[in-house]
Image 1 (spheres, helix red, strand yellow):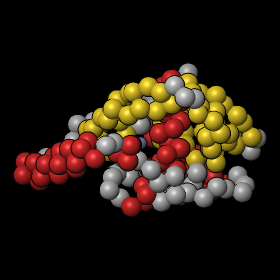
Image 2 (cartoon, protein in one colour; image 1 turned 30 degrees about the vertical axis):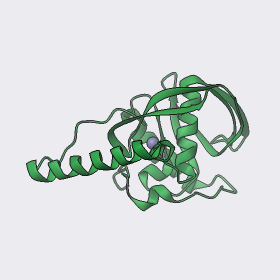
Image 3 (cartoon, protein in one colour; image 1 turned 90 degrees about the vertical axis):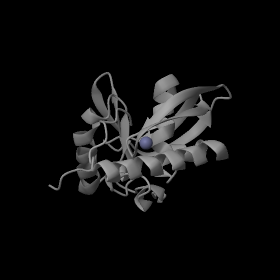
Image 4 (cartoon, helix red, strand yellow; image 1 turned 60 degrees about the vertical axis):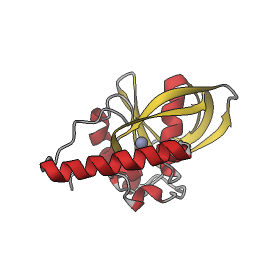
Length: 178
Ligand SMILES: [Zn+2]
């Protein structure tokens, strides 16, 4: 099997909205396997299939050190109470963004056995789910920044890319996020 690689911004793959699946076939199980090979490197967080170039509506996450996967996830309800958190993204390494999101959400999805599950997720887990579901809708964490923050990010990103060219440093510091 080909080596699993993280797709990075601004790769257009990250901007595609993924259609829901009708059935869980071998391709889906293969995709789940591929996600699971990268999850241990996501520092306890999560990874969406399109972040490794697979156009399927699946994300994996770690809960109590176990790999879990949700297929066709949809947010059914969001709480009114919000909180800020510094979010990172494996597809946008070396950056953290102050993002405000609802504290609690209700998610409906399929599990890998093909059963419909409803999960209420709060705090960090709720945030991880929202971040990953955004990925599957072609949305990135930078879309939630204001104009000033977006501009600052783009300038920083360009200057980082530039300095990497100048110093010939090809490997950035190891990212530790989702
Ligand atoms: Zn991400």
